[in-house]
Image (cartoon, rainbow, N blue to C red; front, top):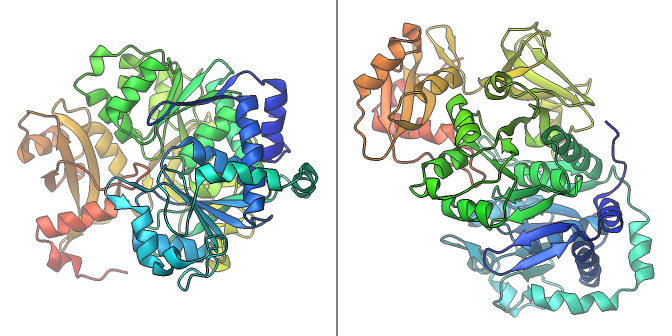
Length: 553
């Protein structure tokens, strides 16, 4: 692979020159927005100047708190073109989380939509800093967020103390081309361009610092494996604030001149309508998204033009992968594995891999990325077929966690290997299989049990729509298996039925001791299932408080 040694801004200028009339961004969700690569790049240049007019300089942090609007992409590239760092904010955040992120990231500007679902971002900011409404909006002086100097809203409403997006365009004229070009000339592809905050299931969220080089080349690797071309049209319903949206979708698109078709937020019917109306050839999503689309009552009334896409973000059920291939015509669907700290991709299947490899593995390592499986206890490298911790080293590894050198040293060792915390094995051909997280592994009476193996099997039950397997505390064994199941609509399935199904096909010790039927799983905004919350619910529902109090080494 030939690596791209350009900044995001330089790359967009290059594409605008070489493929000016190819469609770049399509949005028809709340308003119509269609731009070619030349038109989109011209707009990015104007908004880059607008940010300069608002006082944003190289190295400043610009936070974006919004669903998938075109303005999200404009903010990304405008920031990148002047050397600012885009700080992505989870759309599900509320006041406590937003305050922590904006303060810890030292964000100087916040660009946001009015709100999402039942959460008002404007309301949160005014509650957090009531002095906003009375402040000089060109230079906010906020007690709880001393670094934050400017707030810009992207919806049509205007608010005291905040700029509206529509006001920014005119500001571009106050910055000369000479000033703009002078700033661009100081940038390098190894500068940090993006800070992604980890979901923070344990401890405080950490800001992962990623460079232009990290994410552009990871996107190129991913697009190469999907055989993306300028004729492809990618439906982007995964959130842009997540690496899945920013890198696997946006970076993979711009490195292959692919059209980006935005869906403002995930909704099965929105996705189905967009796929058909825009003749999308690719779709990305986490397994739960694909499950929801496949289960929609009107699914069979839609026609698809799909070829490829990515299923990633959490372990992919084999049955669901096969359904996407068979029922959505995405015969070249791929799987990517990695984490935010690796920009995020480390391995991926290819469109040429056999069906067996594409449904049973997460593919092979990208060119330029070294990978290995190690014993989590000893650090010794393990051979093929042995389960251990997945480690990676290469061009894609983050610069570190923002202002957290000790946390960085805990995951990146002295030799530059990122220790992912994921359990995996590799076969003789270099194909990796993910078996779970080290922290998710269930140890029942000394027996190591990998939830994904049991999940994949329970998925094959015709009455099961979705399933997650977790470990719950046990006085006798330390941990027991609990299967949390969402049944298909209008079916009756019993606990005994599930246990018998597993026990008749798998080793007895893999049979769940408990089965809980639920309507939905607790999830992050990016679609990742929060197993720790499922465990808390199970302890409460199954009255396992006493067992949960037992301390273990």
